[in-house]
Image (spheres, rainbow, N blue to C red):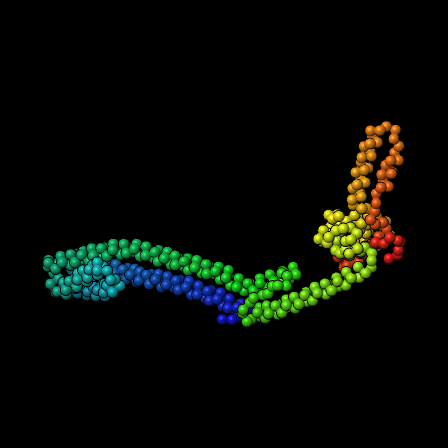
Length: 409
């Protein structure tokens, strides 16, 4: 699928937004689940606590009036009041029974209900109004059993409260663990997106940058391959066209330089004088046929090399160095090029004669002058150097023309 650069950036932001939304939703879901579970446990616990307090009050009230019945002569009003308390106590126990699913709690609540029903039956008999009746003892026993059952219920409720606290801590820790896992996954996913998507977007720009560096090194055999049909693809195609134009221009320029070099070579050889061309670094660029013949050298021994590393005579080197140092024209500088073989032979003869002079005392020093007269030159004349200025000093060229007579350039 081909996407423009704008759509790629928009897609990246959309993916980042989706990650944030999903992360927020998951975190909200975990927090909401935690809140619901804690709320359900807390609401139930509060209901049980309030109902337990009501049951405790009712039980204490029943016990108080039961003691009055046992210590005093029961009256119809007192019996009616105890029966009303038993009805309220029964209603409270039934509501408490609906809040629990544990068989143990339901058993205790059922026992208390049965004790209260028995108490109501006993209180409903008229014979209870006589203090010596056996029903008085039954009222006390039932009240004690109700209190014992309620104490057992409170013990169970205490342990359930402890378990409830443990359960809440477990729920909170589990929610923390899930949220931590979610955050770690989201963090890793964000890092992956941050590493992959910018790389995908920046890759074509890297190709363009590499191509530009190749162009800076005058390498026109490079092209930018990019298959996407977007803004970067348009830039890549236009740059490929530009590179092709540069390549064609470079070929034309090279052909033109070759033609100009041939023209220069023809003109330099038509002058019939030794002609040399060097750059500002002292590297030889061109020698005409007259110089090759005069110095008995080959082009591969001189062209492109610094003059001091070649067999170019020292007098020519000194003249060039003077012109390069001054960056100005040098006219009619005297030069003398010795014959190579004669020079070596003359040096040997000079060494022999000097050694002979040391052995023979009183011999005149004119022998040395006679030896010097033996040196022969293949060329004696004058050299003029003409600087050809470039935009930078390193682009200057120096043209030397040698002549046997003094002339003005």
